[in-house]
Amino acid sequence: MTPSNTRSVLLGTLLSALWLMLSGHWDVRLLLLGLLSVAVTVWMARRMGIDDAEGLPVQQLPRLIAYLPWLARAVVASNIDVARRIVTPSLPIEPVTVRVHADQKTAVGRVVYANSITLTPGTITLEVEENSIEVHALTGEGARDLCTNEMGRRVTACEAH
Amino acid sequence: MIDIMSIASGMFLLVGSVFTLIGSIGIVRMPDVFTRLHAAGITDTLGAAGVLLGLALKAGFSLLLVKLLLMLVFLLLLNPTACHALARAALHGLRRPWMD
Amino acid sequence: MLTLTLLVLLGSMALALLRAVKGPTVYDRILAANAFSTKTVLLITALGFLVGEAEYYVDIALMYTLVGFIATVAVLKVSEFGNLGQSGAVRSTPAERPNK
Image (cartoon, rainbow over all chains, first blue to last red; front, side, top):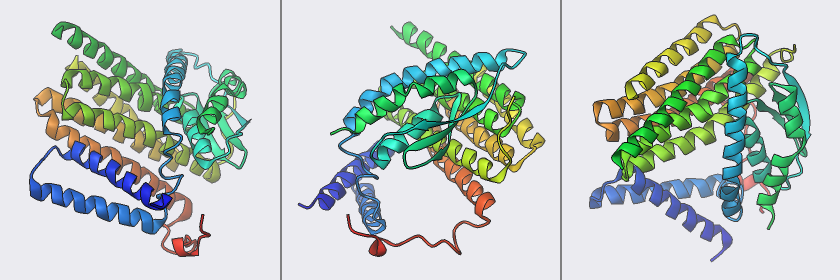
């Protein structure tokens, strides 16, 4: 099988699993309808050319899942920090924009990094460029944390083969 | 056993409610659209996660649990994307962000 | 606890509406609409548990999650480009792209 066909079979399997989870019906006619919709979706994905390494990053998936617990802890910590600033009557914020270096080689890696930055309250991705990301931070402290590049290194580690 | 589950679920719901409310207060209090996005991020992450995980503990092992977790995954994937699109559009459409 | 969560969510939605009314820019209003739709999703799910028919309500909430995201991005696209991509910048079809 060519890599493209393997990917289509994988996509079809994932979509079928999703369909079964969402429907919860085991009637034959409904299952056939589900199969039809999966087939149409896979066909459209192939026609649009989006079933490539970017649309379905299979190789990086296990490492990305291993990265999630660290990300969850960072998100909770910054949530508490920003929440404390909001309820403080004097509103202690000092917004800054910084440009952080992004040394991820693949587009998937850069997207994961940019999305992680935005997911963490206190920092928002403004622009994603070839090897840097422009970030709006709520506080200078948040910008400095980002400049230590710990998150960036962890995302880069996810895409290594 | 049942008691522990309902207490844990209540804790999650309380945390989710508190953070949702704080995020909304932030949306009203913050000085410009970029800082308001940070506040909206609180509601979208810990607020949504708290409420949905609290409800998931009530659901027990069923298809409902899977759907609740799937909804949380969608929210956590889509909201940063929408947030970034909004920040980018605002950056192009407005003057520079508000500085202290 | 569930009732308190519902009340807090309603209060948060009111705060988001307040920001939508006050503006001042179109981006603030889009932000408020996005925050409002996230809270609507949570409200629908929690309401499902309150009335005891969560299996049906959670499906509606799941759809609302996806539709809310698409609505936000569509409105942003219109506000930035003045259309939804019908004219002007035509994206290349797979046939024209270099093979990988």
